[in-house]
Amino acid sequence: MLKIHNPATGALIAEVPEATPESVATSAAAARAAQPAWAATPLAHRVEVMQRFRAALEAQVDTLAATLTAEVGKPIRQSRNEINGLLARIDFFNAQVEATLAPQQVFDEGGTREVIGLDPLGVVANISAWNYPYFVGGNVFVPALLTGNVVLYKPSEFSTLTGLHIDRLLHEAGVPKDVFVTLVGRGEVGAALLAQNVDGVFFTGSHATGARIAAAVGPRFIKLQLELGGKDPTYVAEDADVKNAAESLADGAMYNTGQSCCSVERIYVHERIHDAFVAAFVETVQGFRIGDPTREDSYIGAITRAPQLDTLEAQVTDAVARGATLRIGGARVKGAGNWFEPTVFTEVDHSMALMKEESFGPIIGIQKVSGDAEALALMNDTRYGLTAGVFTRDEARAKAILSKVNAGTVYWNCCDRVSPRLPWSGHGDSGVGLTLSTYGIQTFARPRAWHLRQPG
Image (cartoon, rainbow, N blue to C red; front, side):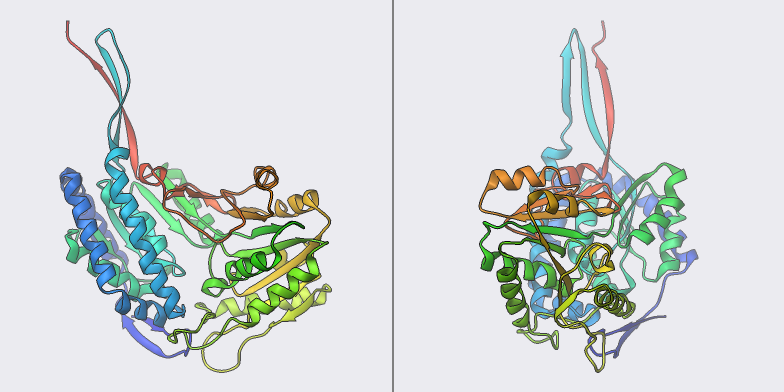
């Protein structure tokens, strides 16, 4: 049995039966058998099913948010924000899928036509994440189902109850049982899933786990998509609006208790405004309420995974030992559950783990820089490449810097923002492949080249 604990209190809230290697194999075989019939259903029907799923999410948002908060520790308002945010992504996929899948004629001459068609991949393995289970999961299973695939969905063991809600709502909306199959469990279940005859593996999580998955499935030459971590930097230039930049970046660093792959994790500030920015930033963070995630006014929730507290403590110890200045926070919160204070450091540099390794918590380092060139060099001094941002009043200046940053997503005067209309991808150790946008629909299909010649 999988035991599920509330990270805010440590209390046991549920026990759920885990899948076994045998049940995973049986589910995979049933899904394979069910895929042709699902792909043959009219696209309009699949869109209608997804519309019913959307309506159910909207109608049950309070119940779903309460479950998410209980098992992940996310503040209740942020849980509702996530579920409501998925609605717009479903709308986008529903609106774009028909045109995206339409055959494209690319040549017509002398009785010969050339057409590009798109077919479903087939059986999709979706190993999802706990920090945004609706967003991260929905980025995969919504377009995968719309494009005619079947999905073997393994929710994170830290968001299992949410995964079961998703499973229930999809089936109630009309997705057949063997078309969307939820596999509950820990790493052993994930390994059993990877051993099945699947046509694509879509994983969101840590770089270490992603590397193991790549090693396991690489020799099979199937579709592999890995959405991994980040160490996302932002540069605040001397002409930026200091108060606006500080408030925006404090939210970007601390929202979801810093447990986002696109959380702001490094800030570089021009020396002319450094002190003013730090003062405004610390003042903003001091206003973030840490406490019971079920309260409407809580902003900082619990750390979902207890071992992450050790990582945060180690980064604090290392930063202090190497000369960083602790401005606020820096310690666990005593008592039940997994809690860590919002933490801000200055006088940091790249000798410190805080500025090099993913934190995945409410902790940030702010480094003073002399100008654009130094900021750019530091922003690119990382093995990750997910997002990066620049705050300046000059759009041309921002574009000149951001065009040279190794990142899949870049921001001017904003941060920690994801749009269904834009592809979500990364460079380096942030992964391979993409979700969202029309490209994120096409990723669940394989092209078929049609050569069509009229007789005689």
